[in-house]
Image (cartoon, rainbow over all chains, first blue to last red; front, side, top):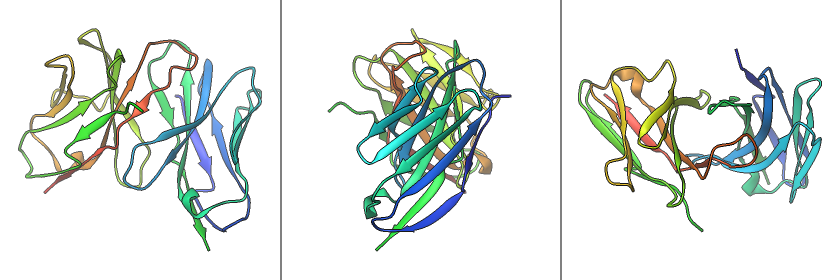
Length: 112
Length: 116
């Protein structure tokens, strides 16, 4: 069964600090992995996408890594801002499959 | 910038009633999806739709659910007889073309369905 597990479930960080979110998946055959940001009460918005051959991708203060051998990904947030408070969802796509496999999300709260 | 829109933003209904959730996908997109997210749970796939027919559906999408693209613009999800456990956030998404690479699914803001 295609699964995506994320950790930690939630974390609180001080404004200006960095944090790293983890994602492990069992989706196969792997096509691509996206990190989405979901603000409370809103739909998910894509931050990064990585395919099998890519092991790092940046989008501003967000940097995602991918290790396709160990089936792990991370999302690093640099110099966090209050607006980074959101749920960060790891979403994995399998080849030839219309469906996306969603993780439960990492709930990040940035405090002043 | 084009975006997926959904109405209503919040729907409250009595158990057993029918509800229709509406979505307007991005205009040149060809693939449409419905997802749901029960409070505190992960987003779950319900159904995908292409060329005026369902291309894939999950175990959740039983006979109580149906989808329709009635006028080439709207994409609707109907729940015939709502149950308490249907209470969730329902997201519509659309995608330009199929394919494994890129071709991001763009999500709408969601409709929060509350069944009493």
